[in-house]
Image 1 (cartoon, rainbow, N blue to C red):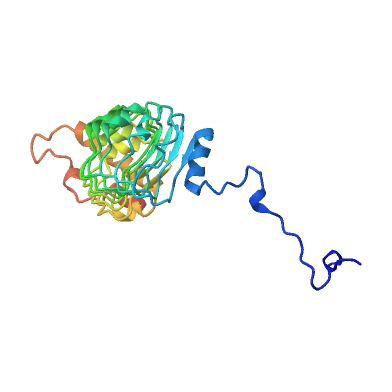
Image 2: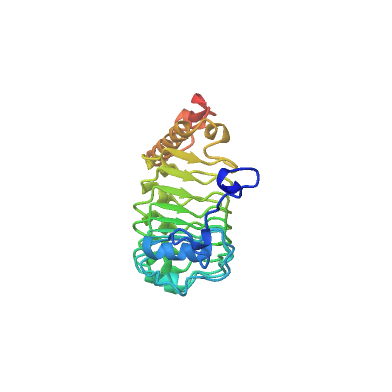
Length: 293
């Protein structure tokens, strides 16, 4: 007589695989997702702990000193973990969207660090020693910065600087020493003027929108490599708003004309008397820039 279960009948009970007896390496009930991420980073050199609501650094039991890329963004850290500052080979550090109030001096141990994103935190100052690092990209937007230290001029390799959405009132002239700088974002601050020293930088993109700037210095006509200039939401007077709305080409035409007029005025000899003054100096002429708007 045959058993019903062997026939696949109504009362048959199919055999189930015993997962608890599996010896495969893909499943280990004793390891949670965080531990798995930490174990993976030991082998890969990439530490990804983004979006885990961490208040403390969880990697004390792991040797992560060979880490080259670390992402601790979108957590609740109140400080940069001291252990991270011992990752000597670290090249990239992402601390976006935490609650960090200061940058510790121990960060100078990271002499391979070229990328630092510490935006959307609670920083009120940038320490001087930060600019002794070989940074190429520095993102510190959406903090509470009131100023930028003069020591920023030491960051000779810096190519991208984003200090937007802070409360900065003055940009130090030492920014003009950043001879590798390609992108500068100073949007949404409290700036009233732009330093002339920026004119000699190899900038490709400049964003100073949403400030209180009224004038673009005529020397900015020397920004030959500039491809994008973003200046909306400023009380612009020179160039006038109607010129700014027409874009970069018209802005630079205006700056060139302004520079030429200034040079002509400087070279013109002073009149000996009101009678000998050239007639055109007394006439009310239409400004040159208005002839092509």
